[in-house]
Image (cartoon, rainbow, N blue to C red; front, side):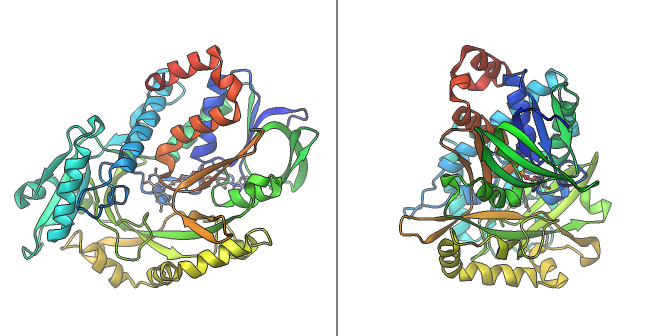
Amino acid sequence: MTSDILDVALIGAGIMSATLGTLLRKLEPSFRVAVFERLDRVAAEASDAWNNAGTGHSGYCELNYTPARDDGSVDCAKAIQVASQFGLSLELWRSLVASGDLPAATTFVREVPHLSFVWGEDDVAYLEARHAGLSRSSLFAGLELTTDRARIAEWMPLVMEGRSRALPVAATRMSRGTDVNFGALTRALVASLAAQPEVEVHLSHEVRDIRRDDHVWAIDVCDLTTLEERTIRARFLFIGAGGYSLHLLEKSGIPEAEGYGAFPVSGQWLRCTRRAVVSRHHAKVYGKAEVGAPPMSVPHLDSRWIGGERELLFGPYAGFTTKFLKGGSWLDLVRSIGVGNVGPVVSAGMENLDLTRYLVGQAMLSVDERIALLRKYYPEASSDDWEVMVAGLRVQIIKADKSGLGDLRFGTEVVTSSDGTIAALLGASPGASTAVAIMVDLVSRCFPESFASAAWRGRLARLLPGSA
Ligand SMILES: Cc1cc2nc3c(=O)[nH]c(=O)nc-3n(C[C@H](O)[C@H](O)[C@H](O)COP(=O)(O)OP(=O)(O)OC[C@H]3O[C@@H](n4cnc5c(N)ncnc54)[C@H](O)[C@@H]3O)c2cc1C
């Protein structure tokens, strides 16, 4: 391992560090970069394929991005923002495939139509208003809407077979939606980085402490195979440790880290084990979240491409947990509470007792209860054809407001120091799909002078022609 000063150290080998490392090496090919990952495999936490839904979030089908207004119209701003952010991700991946940095696109991204499906008069009216609102943006050109049962049955036969005719139904469909294997993508990005002369990737290396030391970041790293500890120095540090990011950010001692807390939400899927059923569904069908459910627990019946095979998932069922990573500790939640954030965490907990009750209830669902929810989307589902799988964790942010009370947030937040030498990604949604937009913004904040230079602007324009 290098003993002198690195330009960039990245904690965690998930999609966020992989994307940032790739961008920085493209913008400044002389940068010396090192990645430290506590597990013995790249992308084994939230970024792994089975740990997330693999939806290339574009706002086409996710109803939680388009809330209804009181007058019956629909607020489309978030969906439009997510659509343009995902467009940036697609651009970077296209550039990297063209330059040979990534393998063929089909190894990590496939076209899978994105559909929304609702029932009942109110929700049909909502979907019609949503379609009208989104259709005003060119990003949503081609979004189809129908209330015709036969047409919906062509789009998603499993959803319509055996469905009662008592309630009206409606659906929208975007044929150019995507399914992304973020695990395969992350592994390909990290493999490409590792093959470069100025880059080191250290698996089974856990970052234990961080401190400012003579204008650089001193990072204490433990090699988990030999238990040897070393201190690495870097001019710029990114904390992309997923659920463990807040814990590491607090160690940095920067004032911007104060007042944050974290609240984990676990996830489970039903995975279809019958190939004959899997092959009859080719879509990501999103519905409305249940009353009381957190916004990211919108149920969906989801075609996936994993390891070259078609798969079918239903979920996610949210659940209560005290771990911050799938491979984390049951004590994570307790350990995350300290003098600096006890007020916001406790007040957010009191404010969100209904959510906690909902999550505990979800975690205790029996298989039959899970199948009953599945049957709202696939009425003829047989419990013999589905197995329960544990998904990844999302650690939501709690942030102190001006009065010191905690506000539970469901988005992502990049925290940077005032001098731009350290950054951390907190939160989990919309997640991996928007990694490129998040990281371009982070680079502009942490490397403002280089980012404005002609050299970096030119290189960025070649990577992301749409951003020029
Ligand atoms: C159920 C579920 C469904 C989702 N669905 C979607 C979806 O459909 N579309 C979408 O775009 N996003 C989705 N997401 C969100 C997406 O998965 C995440 O936003 C994304 O994977 C986060 O990537 P990351 O790199 O920040 O974290 P991770 O992939 O979790 O990587 C963090 C890494 O840091 C490592 N680490 C932690 N602590 C240390 C340490 N001290 N030292 C060294 N290494 C450390 C961990 O081992 C891990 O490998 C979903 C998430 C969940 C949980």
